[in-house]
Amino acid sequence: MKKILVTVIVLLSIIAIPSCKKGEDDPFISLRSRDARVTAKWKLVDYQRQYNYYNSISGTETLNGSILIVTENGDSYSYSYSEELEINSDGTYKKSTVIDGDVETESSIWYWLNTTDDKTSISLDGVEYVIDKLSTKELVLRREYLSTETSNGSPASGNYNYKSDLTYEKQ
Image (cartoon, rainbow, N blue to C red):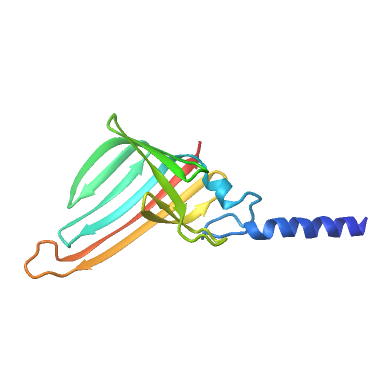
């Protein structure tokens, strides 16, 4: 009986070790591969974005339920907003966004940026995201960008940066 118990523990460890935590907030152990977890239909449930364009326009975007609140240089706007993302195992994805009743659909390719076992970054049509969390029920993507441009007399001189966090729930 003791040998059977030890054998079962060893086998479970061998299965679980390759699926251990990869992203910062990933579950410690998952029995599903990252490929199997990421390919699903996802609904955006939380979105935060901060930006600054060339030191002249700064703002935030926040999703509050189904309302997107945009605050820019002290002015605030709100829109009804929803987004669904379907990531397919064949390397394609489809994103559907509804803003104040207007539907926008995007279809393209996705792929892992680091194709090692880690698979902690993803590209959606060339836009790079770090996967902060990937569980069977939740996907958290993070994108940070910083650019400094200097040009004599150009209105586009200065810093251009933003940080966004997107949280999706599996549908």
